[in-house]
Structures are given as structure tokens and as C-alpha cells.
Length: 95
Image 1: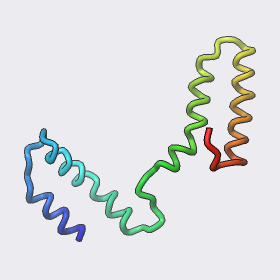
Image 2: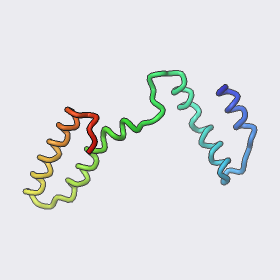
Image 3: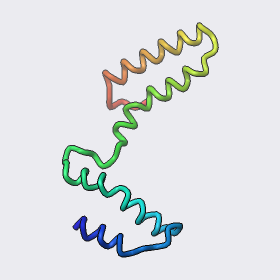
Image 4: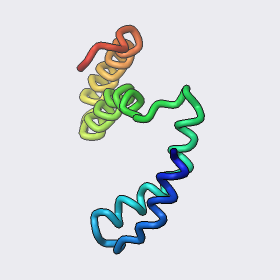
């Protein structure tokens, strides 16, 4: 079925700047990843879970960059430590 899909996309030959042209180009450029996903049942089609798991650290790191006193830096480091420990203990909790 996938071979038929990609054969069909090759036959379309749309103008590159059109919506369908961009979609065909994207599909063709992602073929190897789609094949890998379909052949390996352990892979997830979305990286949302990974993105959610690192979000607290990225946000805290951003906030830490705006601390301009040693006292503020220490407070941010404490909050970052508490936040990371809570995320490990309660991975499904939302911030």
C-alpha cells in the first residue's frame, strides 16, 4: 500500500510552490522515516511525550537566565531542584 502511495505521489508532478506541491515534496522527503515507523512497532508517531517530559526543564532554564543577583540565582536553583524532583516522583502531574 505504501509503495502505491509513493508511486502515486511521484506521478503527480505538481508545481513546487503550490500546497499540493509542498505536501508531495514533504511526503517524499519523509519516506524513510514513515517506513521505519511502520516496520518497528516500538516507535511512536509523535514526539509529544518527549516534548512534555523536557518542558519543565526548558522553562526553568529560561527563567534562570533572567536572574541577575546571586540571591535570585540561588532561589532559582532551589526551585529548579524541587521542580525536577517532583517531575521524577510524579511524571504524569501537570504544571
